[in-house]
Length: 339
Ligand code: KG4
Ligand code: ZN
Image (cartoon, rainbow, N blue to C red):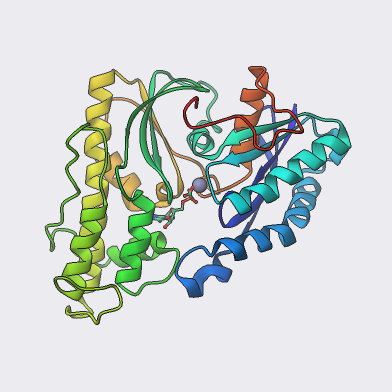
């Protein structure tokens, strides 16, 4: 079954053709990073307008690279939530129009769930129950994966997402946008134990996360107590690398500690990790150093950040479970609640 996957939830316009949920025939990603850089974050209106410009060329390229005609596509899978509503509507309406014109079904896919599926795409045999770890710009979640499409939420962030905190720390340190890769790069040259930062303690649920206090501690360290983001720094510029390294270690130790706790508590047989932060090689190394007794699965190249392949791949499985969207729905019915 050939599935066309469409992704426009944030600042990537992406399309991909995937066969039977696994074989990636093409994976085209147009990143808007250069358009948003000067604002230090995603500017929603600019994002929507760029999706309009790029949607059709990106789909055409995905079909061309896959050597597939539009008429040969069996299903259109589109990321329908969560994300920027103006951006989502571009991909969603494109999927609906294609569905209507080609008389082919379409399905709405949860972007966060697709991030988890990205780590499963390269695997022949999936192992369940497994711990799902979503670490992205918008989400930080631990889930029990019973099978594809059946999950139990274990913990989530009560304030900032981990990727968001990387972006904010990068901004405090005057690094570029998106911040995650810049923090990782700078952290490589720093001493990660120089600053004793701590992730937030969550009272209700030991598996929840809190990164807001950690980010504020970095702000106070760099700009002084009661500082605002635009205040001048009170640290030496060579301290920046130690701050980046210490922040990164602290954030990742928190994710790893809670993941290990969840494996024991819920008797997990494997870990699947997804989301933009899984791009970070230091994190992968830190997990490896733990020598966990169960296998860890990471998204392969080009599947960590937002992409259409993970949407097409998951779309195949959801469709096979007879989950369908009506071409005239305003938004498809998938939601984080039933995901
Ligand atoms: O999954 P993603 O593309 O978008 C969402 O679904 O939110 O994740 C983007 C996030 C950004 O916050 C970015 O700074 C972070 O992933 N990120 C990283 C790295 N590469 C991207 N964070 C830490 N280290 C990286 N190498
Ligand atoms: Zn994403």
